Length: 473
Ligand code: TRP
Image 1: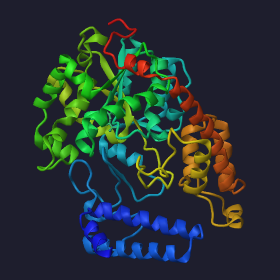
Image 2: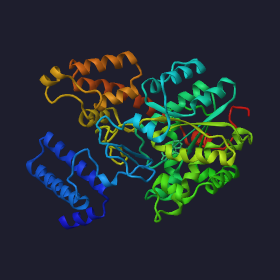
Image 3: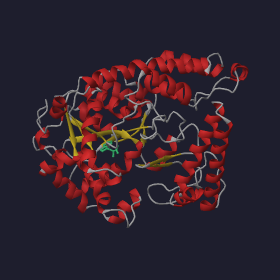
Image 4: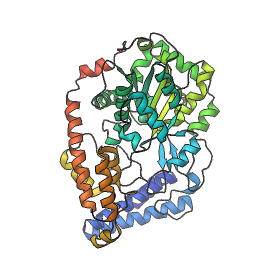
């Protein structure tokens, strides 16, 4: 047993080992908290010690909770990052800070712009609508060229929205909905076409999955996306595996991008190595192509220069930095971007959520009871250890995951502010805060499930059929 464990551990990277130790530590804590039988706790502790030892042998460093192995922390331009910097690329999100990633620093490092009050006010003036709470609360916090989109819009020039999802499994969690909820709002207030790319090809290339399975997940995920309420007359959803082979316009753009990006560049941007398959190496061109309106001649009447706006989580930015770099060289406008923060795992803003860990988030298929249990058991608390201390010193909203989730899902600004004050002052206890979150999430998820039920295979097919949308170009 120990041998097979060691052998198994040797094949892990320092980062994976770090994650294993962290997980095991959490398990031990949970067992102790749940007053599990002593032999079970002892076995878990032995495992923890053995993992820590492997970590030390592999990295030469002692395991420190919250501090990932130093030599490993690369940012996506391949340079070693400074010790206190966060790691953010399309596959990794890592920080040693319990509050989560430092987004102001990320703006500086990525060279994007902050979504400030001026921009939010301008969006309000242009659309005549109250800005979405994701804007008001800094959940969409960074942008590229949003002012140009507004210039164009104010001059009655149209644009279109582009977003996407990698269908890695059937199980979507609430975090996956953030970009879609926001995109739905953008579509409504600006009244523009929307294209949604399902990168089943990407998931086939990166994961251990057949093409058939990836395509199946794409169609399943499309149901959850459609359930967010997109207008069928204004939205085209496509699977790469399906659409690419039918669209010469799309393929021409892929080839143009491919001609203008070197292997060296993608190595630098995405960290690819000589032993990555060539499918991965050329994939960024496929995620770039929908940024150009000529990829969708049926929607844009063959027009080439319709400006594109991409709402996405900040980890997708490397793809679009590359796209924006190539765009002028192939005679296309650069896509504009709106970036969101990451959605925290229930266990805390430091850890990444994983679709394979049912306890790391609330899934769109969870029952009211599962939602309640997960929040009560797993949501990391910024409260104090005892009621007395909590009353005396108050809770910490900056690290409290229940409070973080409420900033995403509780729309009422006044109520949120009241909760924040009551929690910070110690008047409101963790259990009470959790109860508010449970009562917010249960109806939200139930309503989603109800809407998803209405989405038949026929509806999915309609959304995914290449066609003209309700706009003249
Ligand atoms: N690569 C993204 C993912 O794995 C999917 C995606 C494709 C995407 N195109 C996009 C996300 C455009 C945001 C915007 O989830």
